[in-house]
Image (cartoon, rainbow, N blue to C red; front, side, top):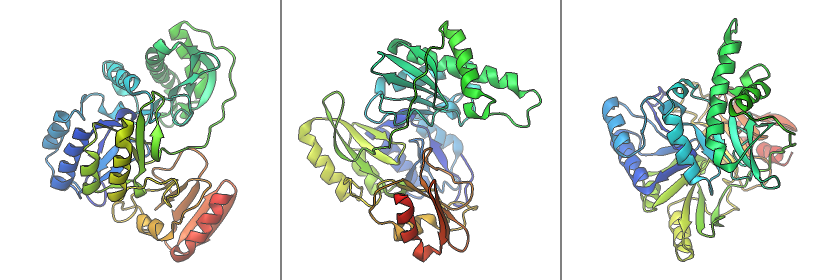
Length: 384
């Protein structure tokens, strides 16, 4: 449970964003019984229940545990695993189980992030340690804070390699901690972190660091509408406007056998036969979810803002709703204060509340405007 201006919130970790329809149904009941009736999607593909006033914590934990959403009390804070939405299900479960079975890794910081990338490069780069298949080489690169240090492993050794990298981070952090002003939470916060953690990991695995590959982060393509999966089955992806699921939307989605929450605050119904695709597209559209690539919400996200956050200077969700129009270009993230909670890892347009309006910044643009006029400024910033 975490404190918030609208009452305590509970963050439910979903390794790889995976959950079942039955689990979402259980969360819907909890949100309606104890919260504000909604579930929020986070930038790490987790879910949050807000406004949990007067909730018995032990009862909430018991309900989550019975739904299979709290498998480890000791390791709950470190079950942070990102995965490409349309691949990696079995590997995600295997990594989660191995992580929870390792007593020492319960001491990882809560911000430390693992990633299992399909090879698309969609989740590897923001993570502390990530597995990225390299089709041209036939093996898997282990990345450290989005950097290739030349460590390669066979597909079957990915999980042991990622766990070894997590241990290496803890060892390097201990070595650097003497006299440090603060404790590092992420690999990039260590002095020469990627190189030093990679060297420790390679030594543990008995491998050498080979030639590095120059990797570039590709543009994110959010899964929207009908999608072909790599295994030949189909999926339907939907955007959740500003990452907030209503009870009605959760009820519709809970009819799926499996679900995947994405790091872009969307949701995917995977593993469908072709005959069910159109029915799901219509059901999600009718529930108010966005299933068109032309939606005005493509690439747009926001922090909680007022009234949920005491530090926020504005109701950023309401302002984003009023200002957002369909457009292409950089992702946009609206924030209520300088902390910038939930900001995307890559280049994006940051729309930050100032108390008198908004400041708009991107790698190639900066400006400010009152809330009523900020939409045009955001559109210009997206285009660069």
